[in-house]
Length: 574
Image 1: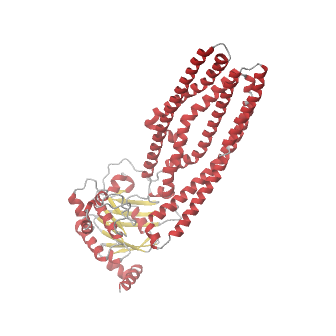
Image 2: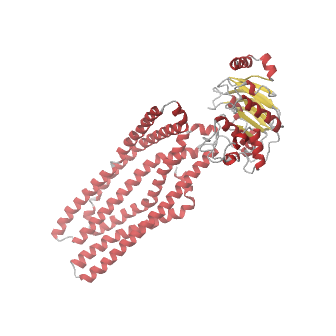
Image 3: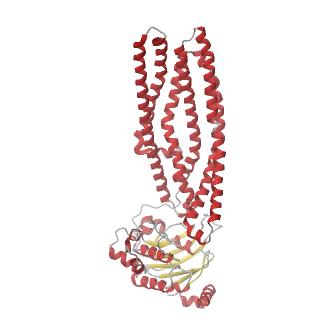
């Protein structure tokens, strides 16, 4: 796991390396101060050094304290820069990896879980990294240095540590062993709570329309309480670390004062040496406390690091070759294609599909809910890969194309229309960032969007808000169609993309497509037969298979499913 994240230190490597070096300077000063203090007491105050020696050594101690403060402040700043830079690079690496995911990769992780990994988990990892580069050098060196100084002052008193260290070691082992699974469970509860929040905010209009605010509040309260209980369950084990450390620290100090005090009374131990010894005892125990904090932070962050590395280790199931192939035309051919979301041959969404579409044809797709209409068209731009068989676009297997080339040649308007924060123009330019004003207007006119855009005071500069909240469902659909048309694709796929517009607008869009997209293969998935009746040919899907394929007239004569859908819609219109 560490190897996966080390490259994320990147350009902040200098800060990460300098931090422990600076902390070593701070430790040297801190270890030296008690020694100077002992000299002031034993030689300056009680000895024959006099006031001049005391002042001189006192000024030296003040200087050492200032240098230690400077090193500490510098180390803190360097650690902060390195830690925040490291977190930035981890987030970027994570986000870049997610952008490479295919649809099936994304299906393995919930959106809420990915958000938690990019935020909470990265923050936990950042905190652990900052602590490591500051404390991982400081604590061991202080422990070794203070122990050496304590032994040099009085070896017998130093034996007290031999009792405290095993006690602390056993306590830490118990905490480390049992805390990790608790933090993993806590983060899973975070995912669940974030999923509830995301769902509520996305569907806030539906929540208000059905007056479900109180139920949503109760659901969130329940989720938040689950997080609280998971946090308490994890933390109540970790917080044992501090009282155990303090018990050992104060126990050692009491023992040193008792035995050291008797030595002072006996005249075998100087007061200055005792005071410096106590300082070294404190430093030793503080360094042990720092080490225990490092272990605890490592436990907390281990669960987060594991979740981050899970994303980074996720194998991209759609790979692309180094190819210079270009999509020559919009012809599509399915050769015995089967597809399964779970990659299980026994659980196929599409079963042995054979289909040939000529370039420039307009193809309609009709079928009931769950008949795999969307699954069929998602294979064309390789949003998913086929399980078996072969799919060709422009005469070549889709796996032979560079993904960018293939997907730039296929414009797809999905069932769920997605617009982004920004203006109408900025959203349209997703189709072609270099599109001219004339091309933008032409695409919008073809999608029957130009008139309503111009009805806004700011026209194409109208801000859509997050997710396009400032436009209706039908307007959003037409903007998404215009955006797709700006790609000037070889193939256009409309996945039930005119369901929110009236029949007249639907008809106008189809007419504009026929007039403006000659030579472009158009695939229209629709629930209304009127939306596909004038298509060159129509596919009737049923339970992942092609039940029939022909013109409207042919299907009306020969296909029972098509006839039933047509009749039910005719009755509904009446």
